[in-house]
Length: 275
Length: 250
Ligand SMILES: Nc1ncnc2c1ncn2[C@@H]1O[C@H](COP(=O)(O)OP(=O)(O)OP(=O)(O)O)[C@@H](O)[C@H]1O
Ligand SMILES: [Mg+2]
Image 1 (cartoon, each protein chain N blue to C red):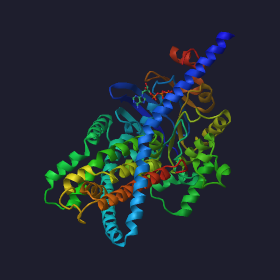
Image 2: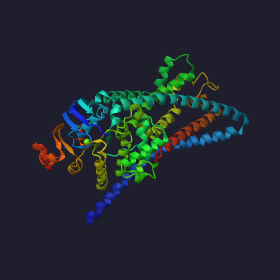
Image 3: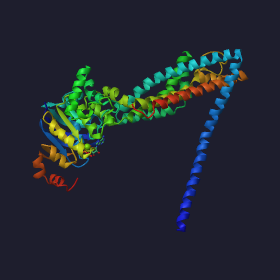
Image 4: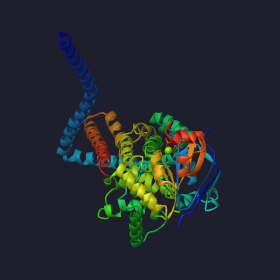
């Protein structure tokens, strides 16, 4: 009887110890994230208030912000559109048409490519496309970064569509293409859109490849040249002075809110509901 | 009207692994032919060769001939073959994104029918033939997941019948169903054989005995014995068949 009680207590103790270790580790992982959100939120809103107090700085700041945001929107939207179109097509091929061996080869290649640092994509395009407009080069650089991730993500989602439904469609005399459009994509569309939005959200804040191509740090510093949000943020931060710093915080806030909105959208699309 | 199916020396492989060896079997019109045999002996693979579904699996190949009403299905367009030779799978697989109605209409739409009145008429007919109409006529626009498993299987049968096949292949169509739904499906098979050639794979020997006119026994990729169901079950010629039908293995 005595041993039994102590055994139970031991187990409870061990359990408590384990749970507390886990909580400490979880907090260690979450704290930096929360402090980042807090600091950007706090400073961003503070900067926003002080900028909008003075009419002159308000005018300049809003011009800068609107310009940067619009450019981000254009680059992200157009690069996402291209990357999603090409990437989903490639994923349809690898998941529905390619045999086992070819499919594996495609996945292997794409995995390696998606591991390539994004700054290298910028470098390659910079080398290839000197002289081309920085908008085009920037968009292409983002496409290059997104493409492997889009292919991999879409492939995973499409491969997960149960073969039973695909065969159900084929058994009705549907062609492969009809099966893809009438069965595979409708079944996969929710997870596909969700997964792709996550990829887009990550790309919206991507600065490294653009940094090289658009030469954001030097040429157009302080001007209203071609500078999407992440780049503008970089140049304002490195510019020095309190006005650019305040703008930088607002830009960080906008970037964060935008990305969180896309994430929210992704979660909403992927909500466990009907098709 | 149904059309006879005939397999002539069908061999099938997955990559290097031989799954079926030279199987020859005649499946007559307006009869139910049952395929029995222990798990993994190639029953599913066999019927998947009949409608050319086998070749859609990566790494799967086959040789030999399948004749539909005397014409080789390997000379026909595969989509045309699958349209004429319907297949019911062991687990009901109605399209989850579609309503009950859209499931039944799916095949018709694939083949170009757009007229709403005609679609509705054909869908009703198919649902009646699958003995499901009375149970779903008031909720055709619900998702198919609103149905019980047995109803879903009959929905799949309706979906297959809607495009007027000439033969129906069934791969253990009742293996995931409760006894009552199984009975409904068996009665349905009785009814359907008037119009179609039916081939049914089953694990359940009683089921084969109940529904099949003809039975073929498969073992390790070979067709060991075939004959009328009564003959195969009462006077099997091969010792392995005898052992199997008396429950000594498998
Ligand atoms: N996609 C596949 N790739 C490789 N081998 C396969 C594949 N599908 C089936 N096989 C193999 O083919 C053999 C025959 O399978 P099949 O499904 O035809 O058997 P079955 O008689 O229908 O079995 P069960 O009664 O379990 O349904 C098995 O050994 C199986 O492992
Ligand atoms: Mg099987």
